[in-house]
Every structure is written in structure tokens, then in C-alpha cells.
Length: 74
Image (cartoon, rainbow, N blue to C red; front, side, top):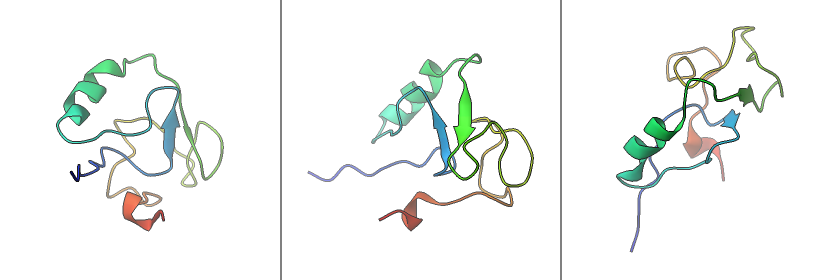
């Protein structure tokens, strides 16, 4: 059985929450991550990305200059 990985944010965005969401679970994962969750960027290891803007699940999306697809990971 193959379950597709659903990319919900930048590949470099991390939090203390779960790192992955599979299938239909991605909607539940977003609900579990509250407004107080702390995020960091793997590229800078800090609270700001390479573009010097704060990182958060609401802003680390495709279209941001430093956004990275999960397809680049291997």
C-alpha cells in the first residue's frame, strides 16, 4: 500500500510537533498544531528564514523566496 506524503509547508520548517502527514491525516495535523507552537528553519536554525522573515506554518508556503519542496529531499 502506498500512502502519498502531503506537503503542507516548507521542507525546512520544523516544530516540536509531528514532522510528517500522510493521506487524509494532514487536515487533523493542522488542527493539532496550535497558535503557541514554536517553529524554526533548518536553513538558519533560528526563528527567521534566509529571507530574514519569521518562520511559521502560516507564512512558510510555496511562493516565499526561500521555500523548499519536499521533493528535493532524498
